[in-house]
Amino acid sequence: MFFFYNLFIQLYNLTIWLSKPFNNKARMWIAGRKDVFKKIIKRVEHDKPIVWFHCASLGEFEQGLPVIESFKETFPDKQIILTFFSPSGFEIRKNYPGADYIFYLPADTRRNARRFIDLVKPEIAVFVKYEFWFNYMRELKRSYVPYIFISTIFRPKQHFFRKWGRWQIEQLRQADHFFVQNQSSADLLQKHGIEQVTLSGDTRFDRVHNIAKQKRVFPPIEIFKGESKIFLAGSTWQPDEELITELIKLNFDGLKIIIAPHEVHEARIQTLMRKLPDSAIRYSMADTSNVTEAPVMVIDTIGILSHIYKYATLAYIGGGFGSGIHNTLEAATFGVPVIFGPNFNKFHEAVDLIERGGAYNISSKSEFIEVINTLLNNQKKYEASSFAARNYVEQKQGATGIIVNYLKNISNNLTNFEK
Image (tube, rainbow, N blue to C red; front, side, top):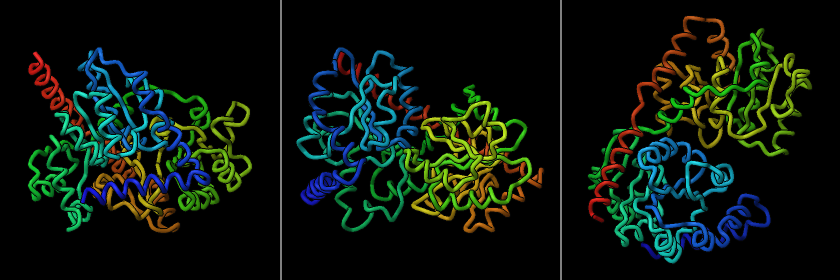
């Protein structure tokens, strides 16, 4: 079956090359991997041990970040190499100061995996969430490098657990440890003979809790807010924005609206601005002359959304009318009740928040407006929802400490072995 896996990898790479003339992400994916081994040879020094963290994209990086930061604090004498699969992670975080080296991960071919491991010589490898690259896993095992998976979720319908995916179960058994988000994931792995599992929880809870404790301020948003309540729609797509434009038309008294679309390239922002009132402003162009009276602000920059939920009274999380919702915890940690569309069932935190009263699922414009009306006009219900959201995040802390303690034990054992 490994033959077919390698064939799939080759076909995937070919597809990206063929789409290069038409797809900007494909061009970045290819350009970023050009001469990556030469860059590794030139930049990576081996005067200190190296720990390798790999993330698919920006979301997984945010998930792994508390572990990276805690590990670096615990072991300042070790170097961290950080790799990304996707341009949307690498291009945004390529200057992250917490890592000593940051690269695109070369495609998962047998040759690339062997060369990467031989050049980097990691002491430990940490894969975040779903990054199961079987050639890399094989080479790590061949090189006696312990590797773990963190913040992982497993479901019965995943390909590992189907008849044709049984060979992949054998590959998973080779991992040193899995830190999973929920009990059902642990049970599923153990059912298939994988015992090296710890129910640690989701590191995102630690991440958003840390963000909530930071004191960053955003003067344009503070001036925009004034004494108004803020409805913040984060990580939105076009179907989400159809709901928001309906909300704008209703002109709720004392309510201002912030929209932070998932994509912020210029064409996307301009398309969105054309759908909004002429008085709507862009965050990058806000000043004292236009921000106070504006009813709507569009966030046209990357990297601030998780921090500005603190200004919100209510939050809407985009993606629920598409492939799935984005991060609800970034708002919930500030005690902001969250609203999202119908495609949320794969996200256990969204299900939990609904059950606890901190979140609301809607499937239509009428339901959307009804929820907003209720929360804005029923103070007791709003306060209960706000408490439920914040309390949920606070109760789920601790995954980072569990994982870092395990890494600490591995690292100490390796150090003692070398002595």
